[in-house]
Image 1 (cartoon, rainbow, N blue to C red):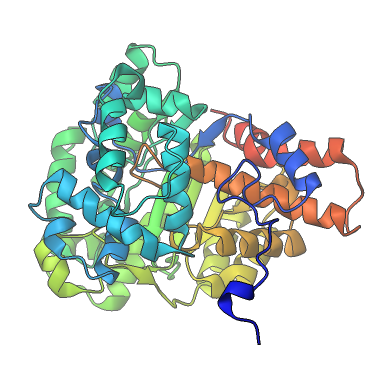
Image 2: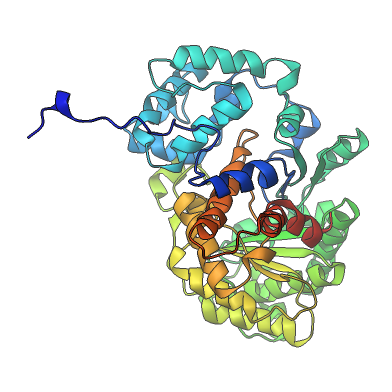
Length: 478
């Protein structure tokens, strides 16, 4: 038996996060460095605050840019035993960063470990492995750069070769910041996306009535019945289109596709306005009617509609009371998706009113379901008209991306895939596109090396570039 001192140590170990990170073959390296790396980024779904882009915000320190609002990091810190005061509480920005730095070594094999160090390298040229030991040095180095003109929000986007971003906006939004960005001539397109989920939330009558009251003011329409409600919402849909919007988005547990009559929906709306309780069936019918109506408007304008399905939100009611929603208490749900999704898409397709559509699942158990469902409604009118979207939220990591792309390859056409997005609130999250591209190139490279694909680097390189950029460019037509 060898003693520890006698164990042979391999000398050919790869360096952590070197230029060939995740690229396991010479073919993968060629595909990435010669074809994928330099492609521009179209980030067609994220939650970046448009006011911070319009104002060309300057962050005071890396905590503000990196930890504010990032519930991925918050969940990891909580799991690591960090008190909430250092996460969303009143501790100083440096104290919060220090706790994150102390957590990072414990995130090994979580995607946060890769993302953290990719972002430190790409934005700040910091090549050290972050830990509690170098927290002060890294904090000062990154924060000093963030206070320079080269690190404003607009320049952070330029640094990553971003050409288009689509924010996520409620129909009540004035879009004043999008207008300002366009007026100022910013060279990166910043476009709104229409997300009307609050307008159909019949599960909370009080919140929906408050929303309707605000809609009356914003749209300048007196809402006294369902028809005038649709009139007001249609005005906002038109307003978004006038301001460059060509994408809608919904974040739902599942697609709503209950049968209903127009008279039923009008009566249900009257009950909502008089604050009478709805039965679960009535609430489902109302949501189904609204979801269908939004899809009809999207088709009329030739928009792309997106459906993010399967999140079970706000599981921890105690912390929801303390911190509110979107603070890290959501998980994957096990909702039944197939029948309602098929019914919803079929109803639109029956009248040829199904616009380009992207469907995202959060439960990986639904991968094959989604990959085969989209094929039912690809009618040849547009390449990849109905898309199965990239690994989302808990699935936008190495394993999730590989499974999504392998399933799509087996059951559809990976070559027509519109690729990656950040779905992030952070201006420092764009190396996720690089992460995706490296994984994509490694998959193709492995197949070439194994003789499963021909060694036609020119064609495969084109397919890689299409997935990274050209497919999205042609699909969205921004």
